[in-house]
Image 1 (tube, one colour):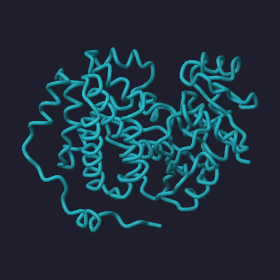
Image 2 (cartoon, rainbow, N blue to C red):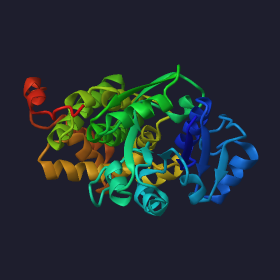
Image 3 (cartoon, rainbow, N blue to C red):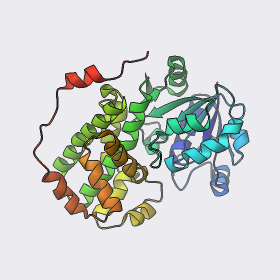
Length: 345
């Protein structure tokens, strides 16, 4: 049995609290919001964000960050990506040398273009930082519906420890050393999911969505390989796997927000109606900035930015995508493999 502090009591934090408790671990669940903790203590349920998933009564819920961090074997950082840096900074004085922190949020900081694990390592340099990602909607994980996911770490022993901590008969966990590739795929698929939702809102069909998924992963992989990620990561669970589920499911807040935008809502109106952080909105600017920095063509990411921040109409953005210059579909994949980063373990 491990002692696990889960930092963030939204839908994903609560689903993982339920899951890790089922794996016979001792769980402390933290939120900065007193109203959330009162709800969890009274109802043992995140009624706003994860209704229907009852948490065991021996999960301790608290607003005391010290209680949630100190003495824990593992910390699961599950706050929305815009709050990763501020939360990590508050945690830093409480974290001991080598304490394991698993980031489970998805995003890129738009001002620094840093991934979330890079932010955590900067704010808490004494921590042993890993990431957990893959096709895993909280609404399904909290009901024990089978899924498969990836834990990434630069240390093989850390990845294998966390694999054993999280894995059970309905939650299969693979390991990877490509932390950068995992995080880029996880963050940027949310932007493509916004595009897929916008297409749904415009009334387009399955052909359109298949095209967005296929060309979306091509964009993400192009950027990721230029940045040092490995091609197989982008065509695995945290790339194409997570992209498919996020573009197709109504559990996806990014797709739901996109549908509203496609129907004419503004970005702010869509986010207000979804009532949760729409990570793709925050990652869109960062994704486009990275494409400019590395000289990588990312037309879907570019058009999503124009819709969100420049007043471009959704229908106009689709026309821009369809009428671009003619292209070859794929370059020689052997070149990408030859230039990919060597696997460290």
